[in-house]
Image: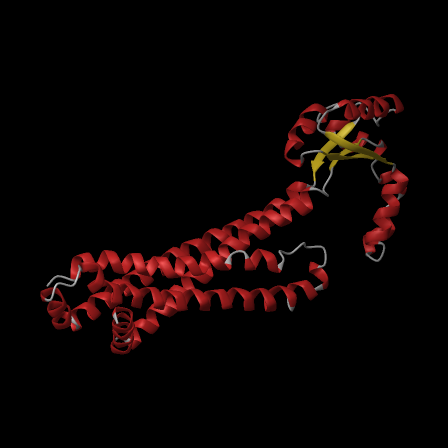
Length: 305
């Protein structure tokens, strides 16, 4: 009987405040969708870092004859065979180094022709203008500075470059988008909480006579508050379900039928469906508990008879 009464009161409250309940559902759904999207964006950045950082190399470019005439770093002349042997030996002794590959000027020229052979400038480049280099794969790409410090400025070394720096701007942009999404999510969350409090306040005021009678006949505070809390929780649950659906639809169209089909994005390792599905219980749980807690706190102030 009590359960039936609580459920009937929930239905009455939802019907009386239908527009505000709809606004709560939409606000909760949008804020939780942004929250879930921010979590997925962070995981996407982490996945891309793990994927790309494992593949990028540190490149130690050696001086050639052209550099000796144009670059102050190569003022002592082109790299000698002895200097190359010493650089390679020192690299292989370092604990942070995993693999060392020596690329000759001829190999560098061949790679250049493969990549840029169709461009007008390609015909002006000759093999003797290409630099020899050591391509170094590290156990931990974050320790690039160890190699840079050891070899930058050494005789025969023109420059030390970390390919990881090429990706930093992209990751910084994605992190910035993630922060912006979190900011908008926080704003939407505040709006949702304000709507929940106002909805509970209006509902409590419209049913002040019923709650007064319940208090007179000995009903407990929790029993009186339960319909209002359940109304907010139900609206939040619907918002969480809508947010979950938005995340699933977004993953399907944005990645599976969008970015993943683009030729320019073939080398990007996107997050899988498991990453999305594992976030859904958290989104729904927050959607259920957040409005319920907000309603409980609001009732302590507004439900007085």
